[in-house]
Length: 217
Image (cartoon, rainbow, N blue to C red; front, side, top):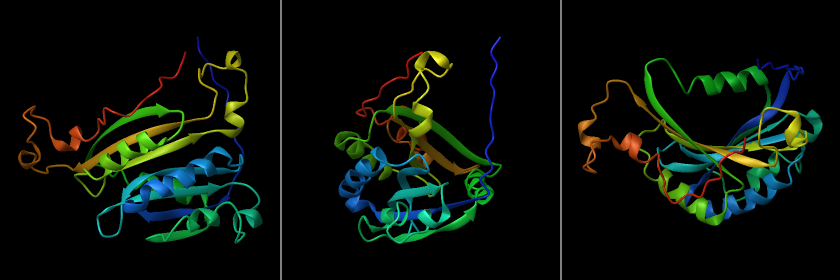
């Protein structure tokens, strides 16, 4: 028998938002983000990846969430606003928001009836070669609903001894989500062309050169 015990912590308001950078500057932006993510405090979690921008072209997506002292999160030189100064953003909207609102915004990306497929990779960090592969995959998005997002595993979650939990990986790492989404009923014939009969909605999900590390346990 397996059991789990969860402790809830009230966090009514967080400092969060969305920052988008031009994809043509992705190498430098992701290199800067790599150092920030490595040293980020427990209160800061940053989702990073590629997302279609307002004009439909892919952008570098940065979504910080600060759950600590609001004054620190809102500080001009604090850890959140610093993320909006890694270049010239296409969009930078950050501010105090209810945590429930950030979750609802994520739910809205997956409305009933929309088709989708998700693949995941686990990496120690987004190195130059991995960033290059992900950049190339993002340029092959076939829908304005698709995205690549990697999520931090860091802070308090990395500190329990490996033998004390059922989760078999405790060192800091990133989980990369490759998300292909498209509208239900969309004609597929014009998306095929590789000779393998698969829609390009699925083909771009498999950047084979990306080095992965499988979780242990």
